[in-house]
Amino acid sequence: QVQLVESGGGLVQAGGSLRLSCTVSGRSFSSYYMGWFRQAPGKEREFVVAISNNGGTTYYSDSVKGRFTISRDNAKKTVDLQMNSLKPEDTAVYYCAAAASYVRPRSSGGYDYWGQGTQVTVSS
Image: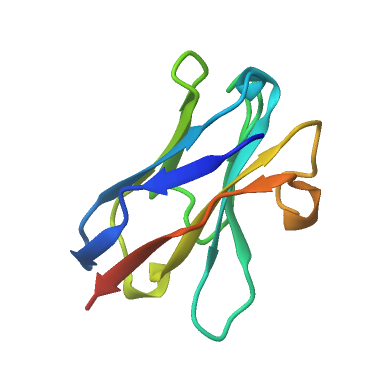
């Protein structure tokens, strides 16, 4: 059974930073593509960032490029999202996702496992 647990969300002022972490149970973490998605109230879930299984390739949405950084530690089975220069429009529930095989990283449909989500609120 694969479980994903996010942590690190909270309330921050615009311009501030937060670091989200996702811890994954299971033996195959190093083979997973990992992604972060977010969903704001009344909006569809959207892609934020993803990273390949060996960490060699990263993918960013245009809205977060240059502000957010994804990283992974295969030994610790964690994937982190460093969020800087946060804006009120970044407010959403952030979800960690894992794909057991190659996935189109920006498409939520290809991910096999999801966390429960963590709230990020950015005040203006």
